[in-house]
Amino acid sequence: MLGKLSVILFLAVSAIGLPGCLPVLHLRSVQKAESGYKIKPGDTLHVRFIHYPNLTTCMNVDASGDVSFSDFGNVHVSGMTAEQLKSKLMNGYSKLLAVPEIEITVENPENRTVYFGGEVKSPGVFHFRENMSIAQGLLLAGGLTGAPLTFKIVVFRGRPQGRARTFKIDLSKGGSAARLITDFKLAPDDVVFVVKADLALGDPGVEI
Image (cartoon, rainbow, N blue to C red; front, side, top):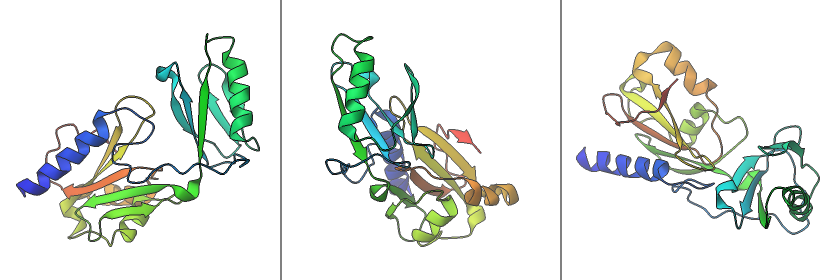
Protein backbone atom coordinates (compact mmCIF):
# COMPACT_ATOMS: atom_id res chain seq x y z
CA MET A 1 0.00 0.00 0.00
CA LEU A 2 2.83 2.42 0.89
CA GLY A 3 4.49 1.81 -2.48
CA LYS A 4 1.27 2.47 -4.39
CA LEU A 5 0.60 5.61 -2.34
CA SER A 6 4.11 6.90 -3.04
CA VAL A 7 3.63 6.43 -6.77
CA ILE A 8 0.27 8.23 -6.72
CA LEU A 9 1.64 11.17 -4.75
CA PHE A 10 4.70 11.43 -6.98
CA LEU A 11 2.58 11.51 -10.12
CA ALA A 12 0.14 13.97 -8.62
CA VAL A 13 2.91 16.36 -7.60
CA SER A 14 4.49 16.03 -11.03
CA ALA A 15 1.22 16.81 -12.76
CA ILE A 16 0.43 19.80 -10.55
CA GLY A 17 3.78 21.34 -9.72
CA LEU A 18 5.20 22.59 -12.99
CA PRO A 19 3.84 25.03 -15.58
CA GLY A 20 3.57 24.37 -19.27
CA CYS A 21 1.07 23.81 -22.04
CA LEU A 22 1.27 20.06 -21.51
CA PRO A 23 1.30 18.24 -18.18
CA VAL A 24 4.54 16.59 -17.06
CA LEU A 25 2.72 13.27 -17.33
CA HIS A 26 2.08 13.84 -21.04
CA LEU A 27 3.37 10.55 -22.48
CA ARG A 28 3.78 11.51 -26.11
CA SER A 29 5.39 14.31 -28.07
CA VAL A 30 3.29 16.96 -29.75
CA GLN A 31 2.83 16.10 -33.41
CA LYS A 32 2.82 19.20 -35.61
CA ALA A 33 0.36 19.46 -38.45
CA GLU A 34 1.89 19.26 -41.92
CA SER A 35 3.01 22.45 -43.63
CA GLY A 36 0.01 24.04 -45.29
CA TYR A 37 -2.42 22.37 -42.89
CA LYS A 38 -5.50 24.51 -42.27
CA ILE A 39 -6.63 24.94 -38.71
CA LYS A 40 -10.07 23.54 -37.90
CA PRO A 41 -12.40 23.29 -34.87
CA GLY A 42 -11.09 20.85 -32.27
CA ASP A 43 -7.41 21.56 -32.98
CA THR A 44 -5.10 22.72 -30.21
CA LEU A 45 -2.86 25.72 -30.80
CA HIS A 46 0.40 26.10 -28.89
CA VAL A 47 1.38 29.78 -29.15
CA ARG A 48 4.91 30.54 -27.97
CA PHE A 49 6.10 34.10 -27.45
CA ILE A 50 9.87 33.70 -27.73
CA HIS A 51 10.81 36.90 -25.87
CA TYR A 52 7.77 36.98 -23.55
CA PRO A 53 7.37 33.47 -22.09
CA ASN A 54 4.71 34.70 -19.65
CA LEU A 55 2.41 35.18 -22.67
CA THR A 56 2.97 31.66 -24.02
CA THR A 57 -0.28 29.73 -24.04
CA CYS A 58 -2.20 26.86 -25.58
CA MET A 59 -5.87 26.81 -26.48
CA ASN A 60 -8.48 24.69 -28.19
CA VAL A 61 -10.24 25.93 -31.31
CA ASP A 62 -13.95 25.98 -30.47
CA ALA A 63 -16.83 24.69 -32.61
CA SER A 64 -17.13 28.09 -34.31
CA GLY A 65 -13.48 28.03 -35.32
CA ASP A 66 -12.50 30.71 -32.79
CA VAL A 67 -9.91 31.06 -30.04
CA SER A 68 -9.76 33.76 -27.40
CA PHE A 69 -6.79 36.01 -26.69
CA SER A 70 -6.76 38.26 -23.63
CA ASP A 71 -5.49 41.19 -25.69
CA PHE A 72 -7.76 40.79 -28.73
CA GLY A 73 -10.79 38.79 -27.64
CA ASN A 74 -12.10 36.14 -30.03
CA VAL A 75 -10.09 35.51 -33.19
CA HIS A 76 -11.48 33.35 -36.01
CA VAL A 77 -8.70 30.94 -36.96
CA SER A 78 -10.50 28.12 -38.78
CA GLY A 79 -9.24 27.83 -42.36
CA MET A 80 -5.95 29.59 -41.62
CA THR A 81 -2.52 27.97 -41.72
CA ALA A 82 -0.17 28.33 -38.77
CA GLU A 83 1.93 30.76 -40.79
CA GLN A 84 -1.10 32.92 -41.60
CA LEU A 85 -2.13 33.02 -37.95
CA LYS A 86 1.44 33.79 -36.91
CA SER A 87 1.53 36.72 -39.31
CA LYS A 88 -1.82 38.02 -38.04
CA LEU A 89 -0.75 37.77 -34.40
CA MET A 90 2.66 39.34 -34.98
CA ASN A 91 0.98 42.25 -36.75
CA GLY A 92 -1.44 42.71 -33.85
CA TYR A 93 1.14 42.32 -31.11
CA SER A 94 3.57 44.69 -32.86
CA LYS A 95 1.43 47.47 -31.39
CA LEU A 96 1.88 46.06 -27.88
CA LEU A 97 5.29 44.36 -27.79
CA ALA A 98 8.75 45.54 -28.79
CA VAL A 99 9.75 42.19 -30.33
CA PRO A 100 6.59 40.16 -31.08
CA GLU A 101 8.36 37.00 -32.27
CA ILE A 102 5.92 34.08 -32.18
CA GLU A 103 5.98 30.34 -32.91
CA ILE A 104 2.76 28.40 -33.46
CA THR A 105 2.32 24.64 -33.29
CA VAL A 106 -0.96 23.04 -34.35
CA GLU A 107 -1.85 19.73 -32.74
CA ASN A 108 -4.46 17.56 -34.43
CA PRO A 109 -7.20 16.08 -32.22
CA GLU A 110 -6.38 12.60 -33.58
CA ASN A 111 -3.11 12.76 -31.65
CA ARG A 112 -4.58 13.60 -28.23
CA THR A 113 -4.61 11.21 -25.31
CA VAL A 114 -5.83 10.74 -21.74
CA TYR A 115 -4.15 8.66 -19.04
CA PHE A 116 -5.90 6.32 -16.58
CA GLY A 117 -4.02 4.89 -13.62
CA GLY A 118 -4.45 3.59 -10.10
CA GLU A 119 -7.21 1.09 -9.32
CA VAL A 120 -8.06 0.18 -12.92
CA LYS A 121 -7.40 -3.19 -14.53
CA SER A 122 -5.43 -1.91 -17.53
CA PRO A 123 -3.80 1.45 -16.72
CA GLY A 124 -2.27 3.35 -19.61
CA VAL A 125 -2.57 6.04 -22.26
CA PHE A 126 -5.70 6.06 -24.40
CA HIS A 127 -6.85 7.96 -27.46
CA PHE A 128 -9.01 10.97 -26.57
CA ARG A 129 -12.38 11.36 -28.26
CA GLU A 130 -14.55 14.48 -28.28
CA ASN A 131 -17.12 14.46 -25.43
CA MET A 132 -15.36 11.50 -23.83
CA SER A 133 -16.68 10.79 -20.32
CA ILE A 134 -14.89 9.26 -17.34
CA ALA A 135 -17.12 6.19 -17.72
CA GLN A 136 -15.97 5.70 -21.32
CA GLY A 137 -12.34 6.06 -20.25
CA LEU A 138 -12.81 3.50 -17.50
CA LEU A 139 -14.10 1.01 -20.05
CA LEU A 140 -10.94 1.52 -22.12
CA ALA A 141 -8.88 0.98 -18.96
CA GLY A 142 -10.58 -2.36 -18.30
CA GLY A 143 -12.87 -1.14 -15.53
CA LEU A 144 -12.30 -0.80 -11.80
CA THR A 145 -10.40 -3.37 -9.76
CA GLY A 146 -13.21 -3.64 -7.19
CA ALA A 147 -16.64 -2.40 -6.14
CA PRO A 148 -17.27 1.21 -7.29
CA LEU A 149 -18.38 2.36 -3.83
CA THR A 150 -14.87 1.72 -2.46
CA PHE A 151 -13.15 4.26 -4.76
CA LYS A 152 -12.82 7.90 -5.59
CA ILE A 153 -11.64 9.38 -8.87
CA VAL A 154 -9.23 12.29 -9.18
CA VAL A 155 -8.77 14.14 -12.48
CA PHE A 156 -5.67 16.29 -13.02
CA ARG A 157 -6.13 18.86 -15.78
CA GLY A 158 -3.17 20.89 -17.04
CA ARG A 159 -3.26 24.65 -17.46
CA PRO A 160 -1.25 26.84 -19.87
CA GLN A 161 0.52 28.45 -16.91
CA GLY A 162 0.68 27.59 -13.24
CA ARG A 163 -0.78 24.69 -11.29
CA ALA A 164 -3.01 22.04 -12.77
CA ARG A 165 -6.67 22.00 -11.82
CA THR A 166 -7.95 18.94 -10.00
CA PHE A 167 -11.43 17.42 -9.70
CA LYS A 168 -12.57 14.71 -7.30
CA ILE A 169 -15.54 12.35 -7.54
CA ASP A 170 -16.14 10.26 -4.42
CA LEU A 171 -17.94 7.13 -5.60
CA SER A 172 -18.52 6.02 -2.00
CA LYS A 173 -21.31 8.62 -1.87
CA GLY A 174 -23.34 6.55 -4.31
CA GLY A 175 -26.12 7.79 -6.65
CA SER A 176 -25.22 11.32 -7.74
CA ALA A 177 -21.48 10.60 -7.72
CA ALA A 178 -22.00 7.54 -9.91
CA ARG A 179 -23.92 9.65 -12.44
CA LEU A 180 -21.05 12.14 -12.56
CA ILE A 181 -18.67 9.64 -14.14
CA THR A 182 -21.04 9.60 -17.12
CA ASP A 183 -21.74 13.35 -17.13
CA PHE A 184 -18.21 14.65 -16.46
CA LYS A 185 -16.40 15.22 -19.77
CA LEU A 186 -12.67 14.72 -20.06
CA ALA A 187 -10.30 17.10 -21.83
CA PRO A 188 -7.24 16.24 -23.93
CA ASP A 189 -4.23 15.28 -21.80
CA ASP A 190 -6.28 14.74 -18.62
CA VAL A 191 -4.64 12.43 -16.09
CA VAL A 192 -7.19 10.30 -14.21
CA PHE A 193 -6.40 8.31 -11.06
CA VAL A 194 -8.72 5.91 -9.28
CA VAL A 195 -7.79 5.54 -5.61
CA LYS A 196 -9.29 3.99 -2.49
CA ALA A 197 -12.09 6.13 -1.07
CA ASP A 198 -10.34 6.43 2.31
CA LEU A 199 -7.02 7.54 0.83
CA ALA A 200 -6.08 11.11 1.83
CA LEU A 201 -4.46 13.06 -1.02
CA GLY A 202 -3.74 16.28 0.85
CA ASP A 203 -5.18 18.74 -1.69
CA PRO A 204 -8.09 16.91 -3.33
CA GLY A 205 -9.04 19.85 -5.55
CA VAL A 206 -12.61 20.59 -6.54
CA GLU A 207 -15.19 18.09 -5.37
CA ILE A 208 -17.89 17.65 -8.00
